[in-house]
Length: 580
Image 1 (cartoon, helix red, strand yellow):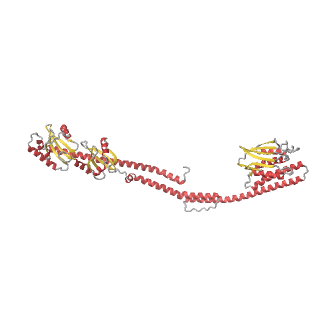
Image 2 (cartoon, helix red, strand yellow):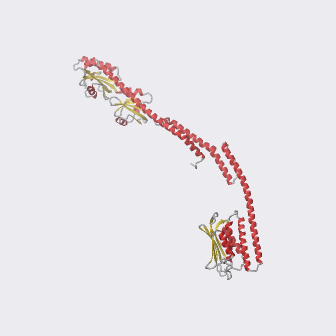
Image 3 (cartoon, helix red, strand yellow):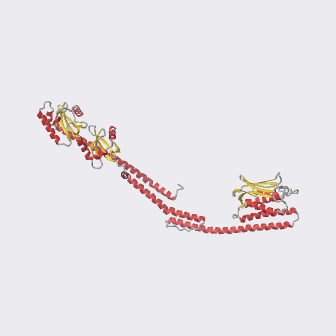
């Protein structure tokens, strides 16, 4: 999060602040959705229970009708085996009149004897039919109580009926059965019609799940028969599924008396976008409002924070690069950002003023340092010229040589100061170029041009060193090269003086060697001569560098001087170049 922008952090903090509200609203929407689903399931259960209660009321009404009918003397005389035809006619007339009062509810009324043979009925053609094979007759005969049978196709009418019957008893003896056929169509209409209002509906089905009637909407909403039969067989009171019309419903199943009829309540369970919006609309509104808030924070932070800060950043970058920049915001900012911008502008103006002062001071200092180095170089060159003039009056070669050595030492310092004032940096000297200039100056100023001129091979790293390193190295090179020029190169095929510097780990190794021969009387002037001033100076300069020096003659002639000193810590080396 440390690398996030200010705008992202503000939006993240706002999102964290809104998260509890979103979680609570989401949980509430989920609870409301589950509660709505439970209410739908309860509504389906209620309508199914109401249908079952209606059916029980219908059966109870039918039972009372049968009980009242069977108490009539005409019905009781008709069950006697030797009842005269007149009693049978009166019984049939009675039953026909009674049935005409309920033409749409009941399809047939009949009275049987104790063997199940119809003695009289609401229709004359039923006389003599046997009903002893019917489950209802057997149940009433055995229980001596009211019974309801499975729905069957009526033998007396073309209707499907739910048969029911009550026993005709005399002194506890079963004399016959009084049976009434309840129209299945009437049952379906009475169960379905009262619940048709609103979105609830009831359908009447059998054990196999086949619809028998009821509310047309509920019948159309029923799932496939196999799903219903499976739920009935598993005694599953409620479930959710798609109806045959393709919509989703909550279903509730309640068995009716007799165990072959079932009331199925259906409540639509909308799964479309509108229903989903109804259940989750409040949560969606809160989410939308949260998105709007986060978007407003994002845009507001960009407008009043990010853009002004970016402008201030670009302005500061231009000031840091030294480019001309005017602080002119493109539009008005808030007071806080405006204050920051004003302070940055003031700081930029102060920095610019101080920079001009520093530049003026640096230019003045550079001019003074350049003038000082130039004057020092001129003074050293004047000293060298005076020494040269003085040497011209000396007749002793040995003393003249001493003057030449002193002149070379002064020239070394003069060349160093020339390098300092010619470079842009007053504290660093190009090591390789400095040695090359030293060797060139020594070879030009050295007397004895009648001798063969050796070839110089210089291999030194191109590294910048400070005066504290350059002066000792320059004096060591001056002393060693000056001593080498005293050697005799007349008998050498290829006279050469080689100067090499190498980095070896944390140290620099400076090697100065030649292939000349010592003159017959050159021992005192040789670089290896004990007690010589040059040797003492070289050893002292090596100690000043913090290194070691080794001086030894070469087998093929000449002298090898090796100086080892630590690599300058702040002056990295970049490579090596060969000059001849």
